[in-house]
Length: 143
Image (cartoon, rainbow, N blue to C red):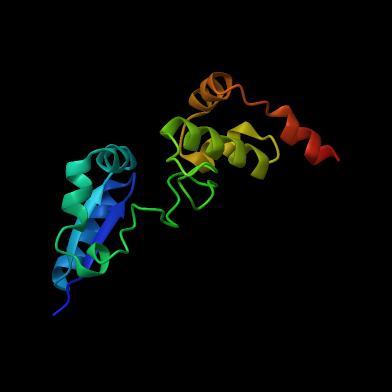
């Protein structure tokens, strides 16, 4: 006998509640999280173990948290390890996601911030923190 588990990560709590109501009417288990709760949860080993515990398709070597194709941030490559084989830090992943978003939106930081789900001020602060040069993407746009 199988069971269906649905994880909903949404800024809209109303939308999450509608999905939760639908899932329970269909006999499915549904968990709703805000993006912040989800990120914090994935950093917590107890949460990760509870998430995959007792789910045969996940505990049989297909754990989505290990070398998954699930992107932790928009635009990040599908692996969470560096070339040397060590696990990339959250800062490395975040920096790469920001760089990719800026390139994708050709230097438009407002659009990149929207795609990343963060405010413009936060993006500007992180661009400075990670010493990312958005003018490189703008130059590619002009070429």
